[in-house]
Every structure is written in structure tokens, then in C-alpha cells.
Amino acid sequence: MTESDLGAVMAIEEVIYTHPWTRGNFADSLAARSHCTILEWHGVTAGYAVMMTGAGEAHLLNLSIAAAWQRRGLGRALLNHVVDVARELKVQKIFLEVRVSNEAARALYVNARFHEIGVRRDYYPAHGGREDAVVLEYVL
Image (cartoon, rainbow, N blue to C red):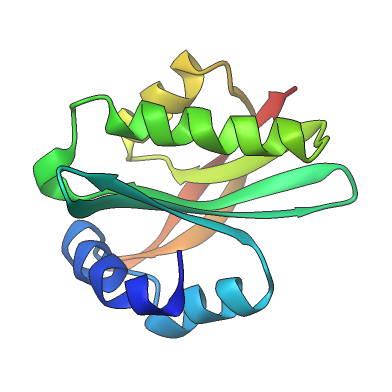
């Protein structure tokens, strides 16, 4: 992912999330040299991932697939890529948070051998308040 990809990234982000990241969130991730990747499929940006690494750990901050391309295995492919990058960087664990209500994402992560290790109360903004996040861990 580069700065020039942010228009396509934001077009996806603003459609699939009720409380999307801002362009500034992505720009900050690029500036911080987080691992930011784009998934292109049939010539279009179909997804992206942002992962921060340090001290032998990684934090998967965002993994998203455009609505038109969901349920085709692209999320799993992108997740596999992120895990491979973490392995190359000698990371021992990957952590992430996911909305309690996001059953599809939770199933993706559990099927990929992530394990639920906790809950962050009121972590995400939601219509009418806040929503809990499930914390998951992948041990490499």
C-alpha cells in the first residue's frame, strides 16, 4: 500500500464499516512503517491489511475485503499473506481485535488457528453506544 492507494482503500472502508478508519489513520500507518498491503483482484483493489510489528509481536489492525469480493476466499488469502509476513519478520505472536457481532470475521480467524484470549469491553464505537471486541492470538 502506498499513499496513492488510499482513495481506493477509503472507498472500500467507507462502504463496509459503520465507523470506518479515516484517511489519516491509514496515512499514519504508512508513515509509521507498519506493514500495509493491498490485495488486487481482477485489476481492482479488492482488499487491504495493516499490521504493526515490534518486540517479537504483531498486531493486525485492519484486514478488509470489499463487499463485492467477500465470501470468495480473498480474506483467507490476505490473512495467510499477513501470517507469512509475520513469520518472515520472526514474529512469535499475532494479536487482533474483532467486533463481537462480526461472526464472519471471527469464523475466518478461528478457522485460521487464531484463539480467543479475552474481551475488551466497549472497545468499538457502535450505533447507540459501544461494542465489545474479542481479542485473538495466533502463535507462530
